[in-house]
Image 1 (spheres, rainbow, N blue to C red):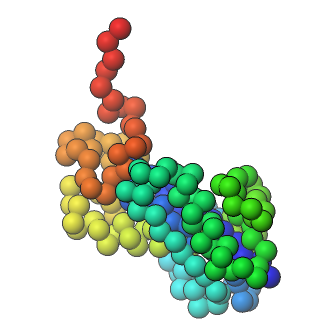
Image 2 (cartoon, rainbow, N blue to C red; image 1 turned 60 degrees about the vertical axis):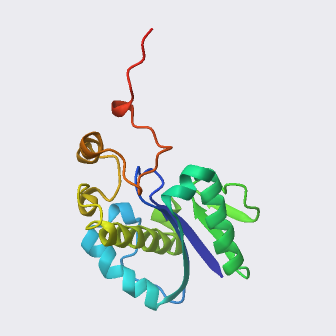
Amino acid sequence: MLCGIDEAGRGCIAGPLVVAGVVLEKNIDGVGDSKALSEKKREYLFDIIKDNSRYKIVFCDNKMVDEKGLSYCLGYCIKTIKEHFSECNILMDGNNSFGVDGIETMVKADAKVAEVSAASILAKVSRDHYMYSISDEFSNYSFKKHKGYGTALHVKEISEFGYSKIHRKSFKIKSLREPTLF
C-alpha cells in the first residue's frame, strides 16, 4: 500500500505550512498536481478524495515555522504522517525527506502518482480553507485572494499595515528591507 505526501504553503509569508498524506481506496478521475488544477476543480475533488481514501493532514502554524524553521516543520509533519501510516510505503513529492528515514522521494510526483496528487489537493485546499476562515479577522490583508503568498498586493498590504500575528516574521521580503548604508 502506498501513502503519498505533499505540502502546501511552503513559500508563503503568512499562514501555516500544511502537509497531507493520502492512501487511496479507489481510483479517482481527475486528480493531478494541485497547482495545475483550477480552484473549482480542487474544491470538487477535495470531498471525493476524503470520501475515498485514508488521510492525515498536519498543520504547522506560522509561529512554529518562525521558531523551529521550515525544514524542521516539514520533517515533523512527514514523521507524523509516516507514523500514522506505519504499514505503508511512503512517497513524497520532491527530492528531500527532511531527515525522516524510510521515505522515498520523487521530483514531480504530484503530477505523476495519484496518491501524491491527492495529497497535493488535500494540503492545498485545507490551507486555502484556513486562510479563508481567518480573512475577516485580518481584513487589512486580502487572504481570500493571495492566501498568504508574496504577491505584489500582499507586499503592498504589509508595507501599509505591517505584519500581523499570522505572518511569518522569519521570511524576509527584499522590497521591505531597510536600506543598508556603506
